[in-house]
Image (tube, rainbow, N blue to C red):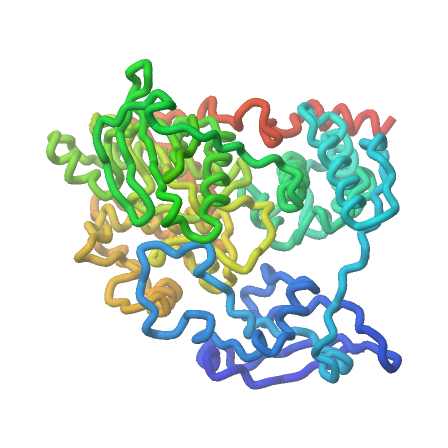
Length: 568
């Protein structure tokens, strides 16, 4: 039984959504009965419905509280007058839940103090990892048993997990090697039963389907499906505290064998220094003052270090150590001497470098390849901007690019926690609207960088960027990002191919914006000197050996061999 209501929108969205149709599931309840949890639909514009995600029962119970029910965008911090910060912290872009109506039953309306309670987890059972102890008492013990099963599946090699993924995938795909969204839902049910985990462990597929479609063809290849499964299992362990945190040893900079050379920069929480180790090698040391760290700052520092340590790619910043003394935390990484993209044109001009189209091509191609590798590892940077793209050396005739600052990096398998990170002016339209990051958001942010570099609109203390110019607050930047057309007409007239690439990158509709692999197949990126095709800079890049996520996936031979055994 479904009733449909046509309602007037709240005043603050009247200009965007003239009306909304809400569907309320109706339940027959006996007097005093506790209502079963409902999965409400978000009120979204028609073009967003394919990516809209249901609110969890736990989230819905929170949203029913009077405090949440009365919140407006102004209360959430989006009103005019909020100053533009140089960077949005992970907890400052908070979704306005008043736009996500909660399905309410008569019982809930009469008794708002009632809250949905999650049922006790069911002890998993399956073929893989059956040596895990059977537990029947207590949610904590059952969760520990589930974690033990998942850890067994993720042991180095992961042959059992790969075999189950290949077998279940083949049942859905038949003779093919790809599945659509409906097929993914069927695959999840088959696999969850086969490996003995609840389906919920594999998260919300509607958003994840988009994220793990690495090549952007609208379907999931068997290797993409395997990575989706592997990363969600690992994220489940991490979320429930079954992944050991990095131990931060106690020692001073001198005790660690480093000598300070000079200070490179200073921020609100600490400084960046050039140091030398005992062997005389130059390193970059970040010193963060403990007393000035934000809430959750230590967790974010650990996450950033762990992320960089697991990646092995010359286009990604490398880190070596993390330690602490009484006052500071220290991270030691590779030293880069070429500055960032904010200084690129002036530095190249000082060396007399000709900034030709081919020169720009090798720079921007490295940037896209870095994102391709990062996304293939199921990670999104979420803060691509000129200061976070550095040059390794001061040889600007042959620039080598490296991505830095992974402080707000987001795993594609992570659950939506109601907040996102990023920098206003670079945050893509879909993130402003859905409060979620997608891999194509990094492409949009890089498109902003390219356009600003080529039109001399890189933000400075006295100048704003293409989406922050003439804006007084975050709400203005959001509106500009959603509605303002970038000044493509200001791009160099002798680079029409690059202009076309940037137009694709800055598409406001995420669905038609390219993924990194698609972008690298654009004729402009493929062209090299005298028409020769360029070589990928990511050759040899991989996840660090020994890490839980360190494999490259399922090979075609392995997939076919499992399928052949299943057919026999």
